[in-house]
Image 1 (cartoon, one colour):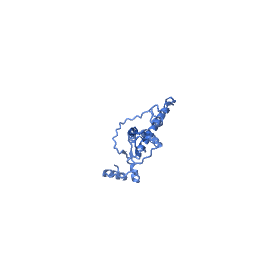
Image 2 (image 1 turned 90 degrees about the vertical axis):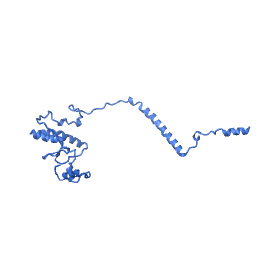
Image 3 (image 1 turned 180 degrees about the horizontal axis):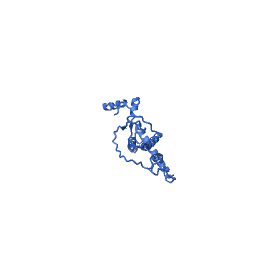
Length: 203
């Protein structure tokens, strides 16, 4: 009888603790321990977040205050240019068409560009608005037109300079004084333009 009991005992699987149910390599144990802990922590965090967010909808909400707006253009008063525009439209009989080169306009005048937050090609170049203001002022024989049209541009530049913009010198000035930050172009045509700017030759 005893030999049969002994045979039955050898055939039955030995009872092992759950952790030792199979042989594990150190890497498998690390993966098992490392994967279970973050998953459990994430589940706890999710439950905690859900519990904390349940009462958020009950909190009082303060209405957002809108910035004061201009009644004329509906833009915020802080960036509104209406105070610098004429109250009544200017009476101009001239029909002005501007066909302008991308390099801006160079006029035979002592006027320098007041669009100081943008780099001009040369010291004599004017922006589109400035060109129109000068031309209309000459054609209409009324210097008030130029002053009126350029007032919003000066206000715009002043506002931008107060909020981080910088004065941009012309490319001509930077080249002549060795301050141009970019390397000289390798293209012969562009290089020739740079040389003309440095020599104050109209391009």
